[in-house]
Amino acid sequence: KEHQFHFFVCKMLALRNARAVALRATRYSRSPSAPISSSCRLFASTPDLTDSTPPSSSAAPTLDNEDVLDFTSDTTLSGTPSPWAVFDAWGAGGDVHASLDDEEMKVLSDESVAIPFTSSDREGMGTETEILETYDKLLKRRSSVHFGYPYNLMYDHKELHPFMKYSINNLGDPFVTSNYGVHSRQFEVAVVDFFAKLWKIPKDDYWGYVTTCGTEGNLHGVLLARERLPDGVLYSSRETHYSIFKAARYYRMDAKSIPTLPMGEIDYDALEKELAANKDKPAIINVNVGTTVKGAVDNLDRILRILKSLGFSRDQFHIHCDGALFAMMMPFIDYAPEISFEKPIDSIAVSGHKMLGCPMPCGIALTRKEHVDKVEQRIDYLNSVDTTIMGSRNGQAALYLWYSLRKKGVEGVKKDVMECLETAAYLRDELTKAGLTCRLNDLSSTVVLERPVDDSFIKRWQLACEDDIAHVVVMPNVTREKIDLFVKDFKEIAEKQGRMAPSSELSPLSKLVSSSWGGAKVVSPVGDFKAE
Picture: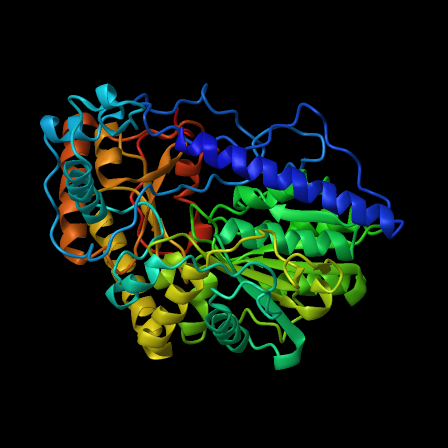
């Protein structure tokens, strides 16, 4: 129900924004892109972790990896599903907490937490205190075995707790004060200034704001691209986060899903071929700075070289970088490829609650100021301007991000990043020693592994799965002690129940043994398709 409500709200907001885009397109005499089929699904499907049946070749259609899918009219799955955690907690790096027993779980049942209409309805219900104490216990348990989703749960914001009693709303533009006085704009601007410096864009050339999540940053970045190049074609890899293709549907854009290399990067030859076939239209390219499932980073410099070789001038292309997790990590890695505005990119979106850690989802969108001028509208009611996706905006999030950055500093963030990378390598090595198939991309803390056959194990460790693979995203709360326990449990299950066989010759698990990942030793999955 919670997810249905979330989807309903997103849908209503998206429809409102889509209408606004259409109105602006009419006002500026712009020709809208080709309409989307009315049968097009609004949301990409997400793996159902409650289904204990292992995936099979008949359950998932096989795509030729050389095919470019046209999502203007194609209704098949677009993008990689983004897993959502259902909780956040502080101090999750300690011991693994025990599971709740049946009686405790009854306290959190739908009947127990229902809101009574009458005094008679309240009879037999637990008290609010009892329910919340049990809920806190549940969150401690789940936070202690939080492996599959990229959230840093190691944070301490007690100093900010007194501010939760205020309704802090940064409605309107962060740089244009409104009549609403209970805001955190000064903290939000400080956060934006930090990331502008991190990604090397001059003081007077940038604009940005604190978003509700990385998806909102992507929706905003693609909206700016659509307004700047209304006839442009959006190009993004098949392993892109689903929000990019969601934006294409919302804004009625022509979008191409480009095949990927085995380790998750965009297929550069396929991209070049598709760009050449559409040279008569501007190019809008989403560059993945860490894909959702494999943590792969698209090569920005190579993409720029392709654009130059094909003769695209600077006013004929627009580049958005989806850096949900890794754009927050790469600047702190020595000798990593640079993602910055010193190169001809136009916007970056990153999540704030992932690497930095925050009790509520949030993010940062940063772009060149000239692009925002195209969507700015004066709102007298606010005594400010409308430049963001949302109207009312959570001022608490800006305060929490500011606090994290001030407390940690550049050196503190770098320490967290390097610890995650080293621990991810440790997990990869331990899984390999245990005889399990796994891979780790360069610059990544996401360890991709064969999907466990036991669904209860998947739920216990909250693994994110796609077809016949799963992954662990190593964050500061994923310690080596927990990894040892995880590998021990996984190995025992594999010995007792067997290992996952690839669902097809082109399945994600089959591609984990590809040499394009590098020369590291890798355990082969069960089965030999060539021999069979």
